[in-house]
Image (cartoon, rainbow, N blue to C red; front, side, top):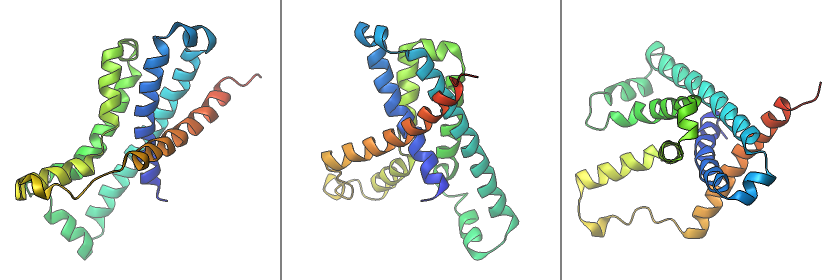
Length: 180
């Protein structure tokens, strides 16, 4: 499993965690029983670490493309001036931007902003680019059957990504609250 895949799953896992957090934040039972602020602080710290790793991987990948002039990199560089070139950098830059926005307190306090930015982190930009190219090349609804997720497989996918993010958050939570 590549580092970039783990990073992408962690962003999605934060989006799912964010939905659960917003639900628990507005239910009085969970608000009184669970220390939501400490858990959220650990989740934001995990998101910041994942963002820094994502930024380093992004810089490393793009520096390799421009440093090593092999045929694969030349094919990649030729895609920069195509109509779908936004798909090359939009994913990484939006993950970095929308996760760094959670460092501001007003975003963490306003539930609507938090919901919007968390849902943006849940987007899979590769599938958005595939969808846009499908519409551009063949706009008939009969040809939209390339991707049909099953509900069970979708829920298992969400669960795996949430467990991955929560395991990282648990490690950071216990590291922050360790008694000295």
